[in-house]
Image (cartoon, rainbow, N blue to C red):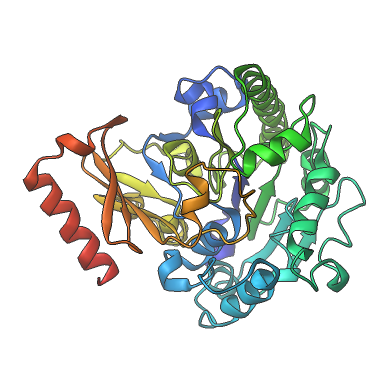
Length: 416
């Protein structure tokens, strides 16, 4: 089937990319490569990440399941220094043969992962089903991040996070150059490759900004407007650099005669919130974190009309299999999608910090998108915290009929 189709599948996850920074979505970053790609692709406007951080979302992409189903997510009672071993254990419980790479392998695909993110690596068991798993280290400093000595005590995981920050600081390139070099040397002509790529260019810290201040902002310590604007400017520059590297990947496909034949998907695992109150992701279900870009160039540059509803990258697995079977993109858009957070137990809050973040640890929350409405439901305390119509908060103006519809969706989907 794969050989007959002659279609490589290239899935690029631009880690921590907020879609609002891109020109395609009205942002200020000059993204000529993506703009050019869009002429041959479908630009989906309502794509939602199933989780506000990396690992659960990547597992959702590969499993086709929400975090509540696949179980590879943070959990109350699992301490931060146990989280990596816990996630690895949960990933092993996913049934054999059900992951995207396993299904593609079964029909003849050679499955390769190129990861610039230490969290997407064999350390968490994510090599399963791949013929080849390449962990890139642009700094040659990441090899000891998951050494037992770094995670044996209650400070270990925090030490790992700090090491990642130090490793990536003052760098615009965080592995994209090495990725393009590897792709350039690959034999893409065979048409039987599934290549999953994680690019880290958009992840904090950012060149020209203080890693220490960003780390504090990730913990909920307030920043002044000048600091926030500086980070936003750096974020735009990163997006422009990322666009250049994506352009090089697209050029490789053109030079190797693969551009029109292959399925190319560019998306993100989550966005990034940059504000005076918080910088980062992983905790909130804010639009800047859950709303993500999704650009798909189908084989033969087929274009589809946008459908009413929302896209979740949970559905990418089915979309890929459908595309290879000659079907359209109808499996990608649904009337209802979700984003889930099961409480962040990683953060140590200073006792003097009275920000909301100190009250969010351990809270299970869901964001539900339906029609033009969305709301955030706190399952721990059994209450609706926020409701939105479009981008406008309407919590106190939510109609009773709308409230009941959304509440029924929550109860049915989460069996509450």
